[in-house]
Length: 485
Image (cartoon, rainbow, N blue to C red):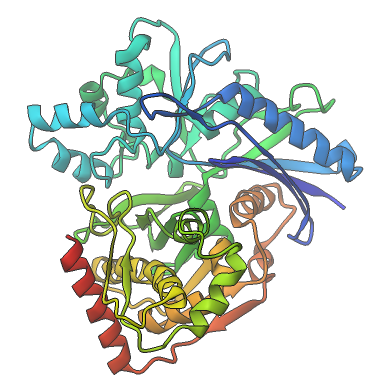
């Protein structure tokens, strides 16, 4: 049996999977890394720790599963997308990585907006992204202004670039189009780093990696001497893009929703660039063999995080397993709505200075009704993004393919189908980010074929709600939003 090594480097930790010739995961292994929070609230990761963890879990998964080196075919890497690493050309880190969640560059964004009120519109037009401290351009600008400006050989990259650079011992300084499209520096029309934006953010062109296809040859690695012969790295993609690929959303209009701590909702819009007018981001899904596929994306901050809130802060549940039974036991006509704007509202609303609210509570509202409202708040937010996608694309979404831990909740998935009035397909497999880069690498290597995209059997949820009830539910949410905003 031959194998692909899939590496999924995420916010909380690093995962390695072994994908065999059938396209299924034979084994997986995880290792967490430290979340570094400063007194100012800056969120950082140690890039060297992430690299060493990657070497460790690859070594352990091969040893524990007794995989011979000659049975390895290739490697693929998916990554937390906007987290930004400064490093030197000798491969040493030039400081801690600035995590995607970190808003330390907010003053830079405010300053640039004050100096040029039209700058945000320019960024959106060129890159498809809103001007925000969320994205690497502003993070790099902050790093340069706080000690790295006079460092002659400092380089920058997202985590994929850092891992590729270290794994290839500095021979390959590359990123793929999916990750580049999330930097706020890639011109979506020319598909190159935008010189005007580089100048505005104070970044030199040679401080950024070469942009290549998602299934390019990213070089080869021995994983720090673990292997005698170098293994090719045949894929790198952002984690959400890799999930879209593994879920088989390869055609125009195909859509996925990931239900994790937050949610990423992404629609493949094909090879033609379309700018959003409804509060979404336009990114590149992937570039494969020279052909680019664009995507519309909406991100929400509080998805399954509301379940953690119920457990850790309200102490209404002791386990997420209690949520579905409680929601089913709640009074079906209860009108309680939660708007979980704990850190503002993401797409398509983009409002930062609001607070979370409960509306519609009555004297009969109790524990079960509050849990139901929290669970349903996830669906209300996702459906707002789906509606914006339909408006932007001009397409009716016929099916949503879902993944992520909260997608296991049957009540949640049925309510999603009901409110969006579309089928929800939940596959029986997991780890779609790791699978996406493994599939892409395996296809390039000739080990896999397109049959891998039909491996998963799915549970399909179909709309059961009446049009009148759906309209009533949506009206309740819109009223709650008006009261919140």
